[in-house]
Every structure is written in C-alpha cells, then in structure tokens.
Amino acid sequence: MYSKDSGLCETVDGVGQYSGYINVGDENYFWFWFFESRNDASSDPFVLWLNGGPGCSSMIGLFTESGPCTVNPDGKSTTLNPYSWNNYSNILYLDQPFGAGFSTGITLTNSSAAATYAWSAFQILFTSDAFAKYKDRQFVLATESYGARFGPVFINYFNSQNNLIESGDLDGVKVVVSSLMINDGKHDPLINFQSLVAFAQDAPGYGPLVNSSVISDITKAFDNTCSGLLQDCYVADISKSSSADTCNTAIITCTDDVMSPAVGDRDADYLLASSSSDTNIPTTYYATYIRLDEVQEAIGTTLLSSNPTFDQCDDTTHALFSQSGETGRSFLPELAGLADSGFRILIWGGDADMKANWLGLHQSMVQMSWYGNRTLNETSLTNMTINGEDVASIAIVDNFTFARVYGAGHTLPAYKPEVAQTIFRQFVANETIHSVETNMSTSASAAGVSSTTSASGANRLKHPRIFALAIAFIALGYLTQRYHGIVFV
Image 1 (tube, rainbow, N blue to C red):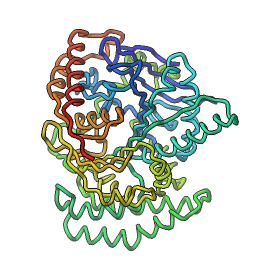
Image 2: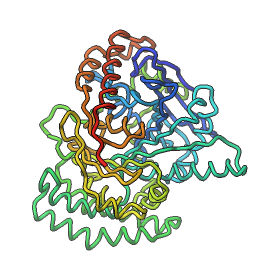
Image 3: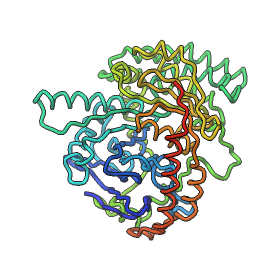
Image 4: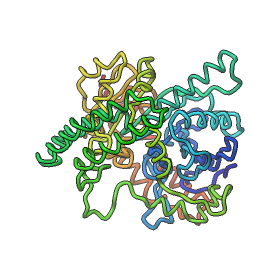
C-alpha cells in the first residue's frame, strides 16, 4: 500500500518517490518514504536510513538531516535541500521497529527481533514491481545513535539468511548490504560513560565543560557504582528477567549519576546550543507539517487509518528495549565481526555531541576486538578540508574509516549538512574520504531561493527550470569534488 509521486518534499522535476506501508503479515506494517536519486536513479546506490531511539522515527532523518527537503517555520511548506543524500543515491527512510513513527504492529523488545521483520520487509520490497530493480544495487545501510545496535545486528542477520538461501535451505531473495555508516553511535555504554568523564573535564576544542567539583562527583559515581553495574550487565544472561533488570538498573543509574551531572544545563545533543537562540537545531517544524491532513493524505499515511498519530520517538518502545536489558549491553562484538571481515564501515561523530561523545566512539573502535584496532590506535587523525577550511579529522584502516566532524551535534547531518553530504558522497562512491574544493555553497543558495513548496502543492512539480538550474550547480560541485580532491591515507 503506497502513494506514488505525491509531489511533496522532493520537488525536482522527474525525480520519483513512493511512500506508504509494507505489510509484513499479521497486521504488522512498516511505514516508509523512498526517493529516487536526483543524479541517475537507474544506476546509483540504494541506501536504507534508520534513526535510533530505539523507537524514533526516520522522518527525523528525512526532514532534518539527509532528506530532499526541510520544513519551513510556518510548518506548512518545505524548501528543497541542496545537501540531500538523494543527490547521489536512491534512499529509503524506514520507521522501525513497530511503534516508531507511523509504523504499527507487534511489540518488540530487542534488535534481533527487529531484524527478522526488517528482513521480511525487504523480501516484499525486492520482489515488488517498484523496488525489484534495486535488489542487485550497491546497498548502503546508514544509521545513527541506537543504530549502532540496529546496523550490525541487521546486517549479520541478513547475511545468515543469505547463506541459507545460498545453501538451498531457504527460499527467498538475497539482501546483500555492502557497507555500513553509523554516526554518533551508542556502541558500548561502559566506554561511553567512562569517556564522558574525560570529555566533560576537557572536551577537545572546547575546554572544560563542568567544574572540578562535578568532575570529582561523576568520577566517583562511575568508579564506585556505574562501572560495576555495567560489568555485571555485560556478563548477565538477559534472557532471565533478573539479569535484564540488572542491565536496566545499570543504564538508569549511570545516566542519572554520570550523564546528567556531566551535561548539566547544556543540551546533551549539542554542547554549543544557546538558550538565547530563537532557532534550535534540528528544528521540529516537520512534526507540524507531517500531521497536516492534506500531507498525510498525499503521502499515504491514511491508508491504514483516517487519522494516524505521529510521535517523533515512542517512549514505550524505548522503555521495553531498556527493560529487556539490551540498552545496557555492548554491541561491539556484532560490529567487530563485520570489521574483521573487511566490511566497508564508516564510524563518524560530531565533536559537539555529549550523548555519544567522539572520544568514546574512537575508544570503542580501538577496544573492539578486530584486526585493525591497534593500527587505528596508532594512526593520527588527519584534517579533512572543504574549500581550505578544516571540517573534520579522519583515520583510515583499510575499509574502516573513523571521522570526527567539527562543530556537529548528535544528529550530525543536521548541524553540518555540507560536510555530511560530502563524506556521504565519497563513501557511497567507494572513495577514500578526502579534502575537496567545491562550489556547493553557491549551489545551496541557488537551490534554496526558489524551491519552497506548500502542503497544498501536492501532486504539482513547481519551478522545474529553477530546479534544473539547482541540479546543474550540484552536478558542477560533484565534478569539482572529483577532480580537485586531496586524498589523506
């Protein structure tokens, strides 16, 4: 059940889109919104975007991070996003698990269960008339935050199912994911909380975030309580309710006693946020927009209900995952297996993020058991520039890339859209992440000025000549990036 070419959000002439529901059986429905590539839909990669939570809608990513449009302050109209990732890929935003966003169905409590339903969704998609052509494309899974769990668990499950198909023990369509991107991931609670103490004491580039008294308190809390509880959780059998309770208690205690005092009155997503600012990043204008009756009818959310509800993040789903014990566990072993196999991976984080601070991200990759951990630890991060300006620092070990993005918060692409798109483009093109000279700032201006579309403009493609000009600028920026980059290895 889906709507085709609603004319909303993606308003570039000739670029197709689908939105609606995937019925995976027994009244379980995934909500999705898919956009063709603005470049070459017939050959560009296929990307799956998942937000985290657990229980957060991928409409966050669509409207505030990597999608074709952003929503204006009026909550009723959109503006073309010149830094959309569908400039270089066909991209599908999926609300999962059930309960996230517009998706509805059985209650799930862990990532392994969620993976089985995601597999079912792609069995349906890749045998459908609309999506079968993408099943043999390069498939990139892009995710963030709790996606550090979803990403590797999904890929490992998909690979196990593919092996069964290969051996003849399962009848189905292979779903072969070729690469994984995780920004601001929550990989390992123990490392994350420990690194937060160091980050709060002296955040690289920002200095001390709290006074010495707070540092003393959170250090004691980590050493005396938090660390031990998490270590107990890591060795517990969470299939037993008492062990699941141990993990749930650990994550709650560490959050209350370490995270909360370290963050203080700052924004945990973005330590540079100002309380005096009239505009928060990312904005929530999209939540007003997507609840409009005319928008919901156009994009097909009314196919299941005449008045579907929408919550940015589902508290019930988050609570159930925590109560199952999963949120208190490390998911580095699942990622380590992929890294050890030479799978193409990008781990990147904003250096103004306190929820998943980049020191912890880097330390997680260094402590993770894979063949490149020692090399990564000994590899200095090297600056990446755009038009001569330092925007990130990179360390690369074979197919594994780690990146710190300067000035970005927890939902990284929302804060540094040009940087994020540049790194994304290079990654999906299987390039080594490198510095560029680009005129994307010009294309941003050209594309943004005349690309506003109101909700009442559903099914109408507006200003095709101006949109064509915007894409020309984007294409020119792409060519400049290809031929004027400097590769750091």
